[in-house]
Image 1 (spheres, rainbow, N blue to C red):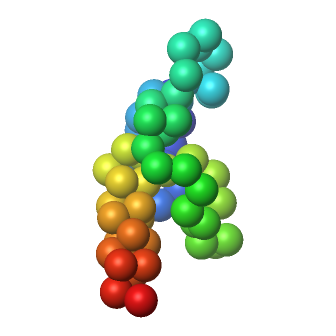
Image 2 (spheres, rainbow, N blue to C red):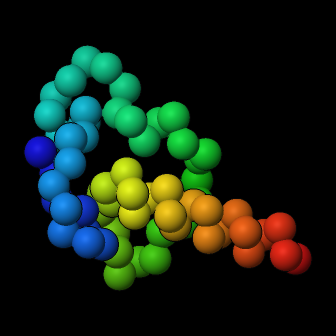
Image 3 (cartoon, rainbow, N blue to C red):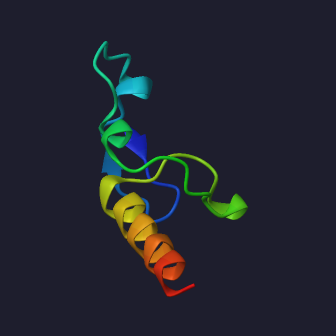
Length: 61
């Protein structure tokens, strides 16, 4: 189990758990920078929310 560095929720991470399967995060859009102060893994809800906000910002440009 991992702990989200943004909200503190526990969630499964294939890399941390040693699973041979890809982690859930690999199915999300790649490479949106995460704020430096939040370095570490985020739970699915926090990462999806961050991606949505960042993509919305890009659409507005």
